[in-house]
Amino acid sequence: MAWVRTLDPMASGGWEFRSVATDGSWAIFTSTHQLKRSGQIVTGWIRYEYAEPQTGQGNPYMSAVEKQQYDCKKQQTRNLLVIYYSANNIQGTEETEEADPKATPWSPIVPGTREETDFTWACDQGRGAGAR
Image (tube, rainbow, N blue to C red; front, side):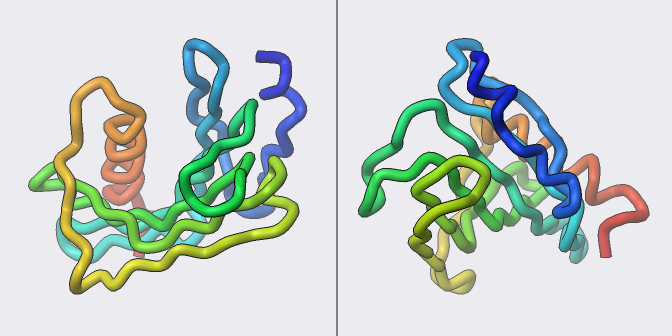
């Protein structure tokens, strides 16, 4: 897990370290910048960093940021935008995958998953004064 210490926290972007996988394969950062709440819906950014290249979405990537929406009342989420980066610390070449919010289905939050960790953070932050 020593690779996690090499990651740039990127505090100027409001990023804060949240968690790391027990096997050290990934780390999660969240940002309060651009966090918005509209009724029970919170929209925010999540950053994933990986120890090894990830595949499955075009070219291999080491870092990704996701713009997520969370329905805090119905306990569900949907992904609006993902930007994949070829290097850690959201560096290198990038590929973008954008979804149409009107056509993107909601997915339930599964207990014990990293999505539940993200959901809990977003809904807790969304209650605060920082969300607009």
